[in-house]
Image 1: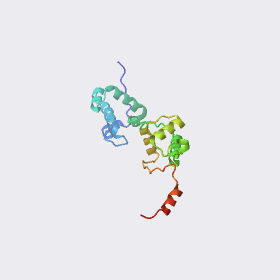
Image 2: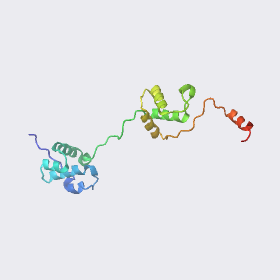
Image 3: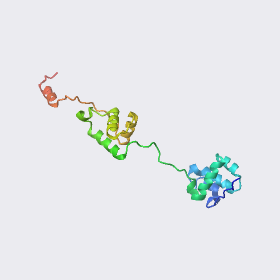
Image 4: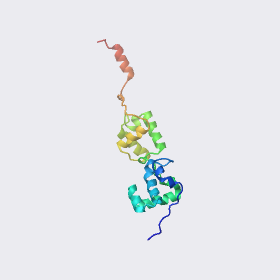
Length: 171
């Protein structure tokens, strides 16, 4: 049987008060403080772990974290939230420029950007394969919304339209 772990009592003497959320302890870590306070008061480690709703091994890990880092060691350790981004910030800036500039019919082969067209352009330029839904997420993060203007025909001639309006009889 291994030697018992000794808890270095720093500021945990007021364990029950700390467990209520005072003195800078996060709410989500309060049950950890409560379990350690129960151990310091003489409760068995098994009973203290059951009172906190965990197993004895997890209580042991928290004791080690508390001994090494103090109360800060009992706080949750969050990594960056959300999924990993597929495009770097520079690539996202390039995509934003494409959308602002609009497609070139001769170069891109489309009159307006659709999600499928942007996915194809991103794959060709950066080698990153994105689903259409992921393109929507990227566009929304860049500040674009789905507002679709009525497209113009490639053979559109504004001068011909104006002359037609002026020479046509009124209805």
